[in-house]
Amino acid sequence: MNIITNFNRDFKMSIQFAKGWDYAIKPGECYRNIYNIVTEWGLDNNIQVGYGYWGNPSISMIRHCFLINNSEVIDPTLGETNREGCCYHIFKVFNQGEYYDTFYNFLEQNPDGEIYDSLIGMIPEEAEYCKYAIENKVRIDKLSYLTYLKRYDADNKIVVAGSGGVN
Image (cartoon, rainbow, N blue to C red; front, side, top):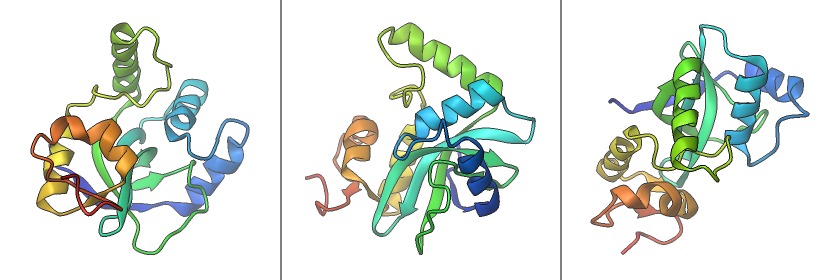
């Protein structure tokens, strides 16, 4: 799996989705937001679900979920938010069927989990992103690290934003 970096965001489509789904889009709830859009609206053949990290790699990247249309990100959670130097690192892209299958598998293994949960531990490609982050000195948000990447970082080599490292 190759990590896809520096994806551009389609601001116009991101804003359209954010405004068109304003009743279902909540700040800080990207996984639920995307789940709501996919299950209520569905995806056409060009739009997929992306899992990855967003932010400035030299400052802090946070785990995130968004849509991908051809080669651009549609991010209804961030909508009009635009920060200098920010980009997307994508480690997994799902078509609609794969997305549903992954959630059903998640619920079988986590019957008390919420359907729109962030699929903790269910995306093996995330281990590859851990290697990428170490090799490229990507700074990871502390909560994202503790929740998602720590399980893959046995040697504590990832640089965690705000702490100078995890050692």
